[in-house]
Image (cartoon, rainbow, N blue to C red; front, side, top):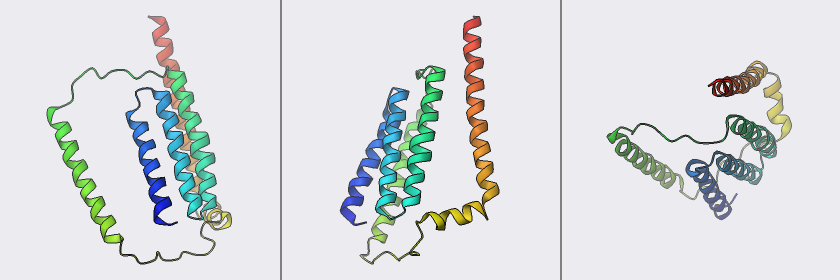
Length: 171
């Protein structure tokens, strides 16, 4: 991927990520997240990692965002205001840490921009077979445990939302 398309995609990814964070409505925030996941998928496709791009669209843009929207609709979708004021030094500490992170990022990007071509990976590094073989042989147990963990998280969210709904209706 050349620098100009990458810069455009990176800018779009930053804008959509800011949309997720700064959106006041939880549903709009989830839709910004969907746009961000799709932008990352386009980056994967541009890097010839078709399998990762398809997984990004199916798993993240499809399943995870739908799950988020389901939970948002289940719990009402409103963001409650913060009832207590944050510590006075928290914003200053966040600004300092953000500036240090930005300076470190600029340093790393500046050191990496030597003009040398990127090392070539394996010719089939982004293919389905190259990713699926270790996933379903060496890493089968962690892969299945991750799916069980996601299922438990979804069920826990539903149980907590129903408990809260029942508590509200009884008062």
